[in-house]
Image (cartoon, rainbow, N blue to C red):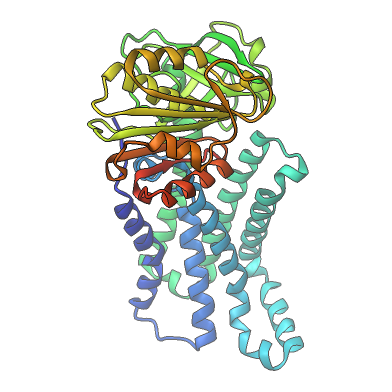
Length: 441
């Protein structure tokens, strides 16, 4: 099973790729220009390098994100986007920076004359595409832009920005005229195009060929559904408990898929998912007919239980976060984990505590610890009142060695951050607390 490169190696490769154009420019043998000019060129080179790398760490390449996780990968993606956009904005300004300090109006005139030149059109176009990318990414919810439309625009604008920026570098760049940097930019453009072709061309075809079909859909509780998929292959789908896949139900466009955590245990023939009603797709689950084709891309994610884990396991779930936690719970029950296993599961009301009977039966049969909490409404037998606070965590950790305990949390991001903070205050090292936010924006 694919696990991805070590995070340290991924960081080193990313840094090396980001600074390589600057190093090639420094080693080109070209006599240096004035400091403002060199600053402007450097900002442009760095922005373009980061732009190309955005396609590599989009979260769809398990080799790069397998051990880092979708949460950290997308945070890097967003941070790099803001950094490269800032550098792209400062790129032309740096050329007139000294005049901007002494004679601002004259500097602005210089800047306008610079960007208005016909040969600068591709650079301006790249900057406009980047501005639209950043604007739409930060306002799409307020604009009511559908998720699928945003993803298509995001990829299209990103590819256009790289294309215009590469053309700009090759046509007007001082250092990019050299063979080395020219080859780098052309290879980078090829990487961007190849990444999209692979993600939205090759992978959908491979996913469709696996033959996954809807086996069944059933209502689990208030606003929650279980989707079960099956396929003709006798081989179980290979994944680690806690991972997720991208699903596209029916004949959907390549960019119209969504990430969902697997709720079934590794080794099972079918794949089960817990879906919360949140968008057009999830609200139409009750109309899915058995036999409907489904594309599956995965597995992905670093929220996983590795083989050979021997530490005590404390699982914490909130809301739909029960899906990957349930996969881990089921796997541990079947594997006969050698150390204590405990689960804290919270929801707003009892009707949103999913699989309650199964969890209780497994806890009784395997000797696992189970704490159920709801914030309001009725209290069924075995369910307590309140949030997952320090008192509940203290109870769940009683008798466990913090140095020999792994905690895995999945749920709403504010809940995960609050619980992680409380766990650290109770003596758990950060390295022993694993959580992942499935936010792909």
